[in-house]
Length: 150
Image (cartoon, rainbow, N blue to C red):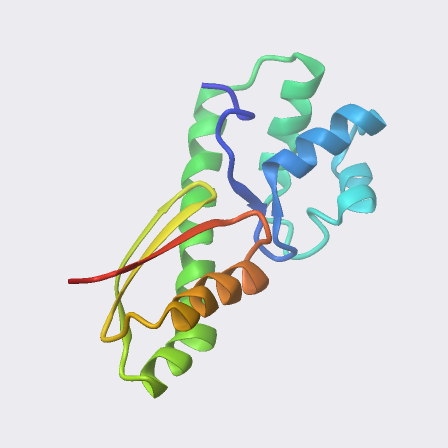
């Protein structure tokens, strides 16, 4: 599976997803992490995403990607993305839910797709707020689905 087919949050500090990096690398001919950072800001924070950015740049250049490095990048990406989403749910979303007697009961993250199950409220405005806060805090490109737990 190519990196491009795995849509994911690459730069967790800046909230930059892989499609944006691929597009900029192709359209602007970006050659290194510094150029990506200058163009789309990805990689300008903690630097944990630099190996993933290098992987994307290699794919754009048509170079082979080391399978072990790809797996390691995937694991780091999953762990860090989940931590970022869980932290945002805890700090930004949970207080709004608690004020209305609701809570998150399940979370599933797959790349840029996030499914949150909420119990205690079926208020559409509150459910919209959950998705909005996650996109704002984590990444605009998140595809957030909020469901009511029965």
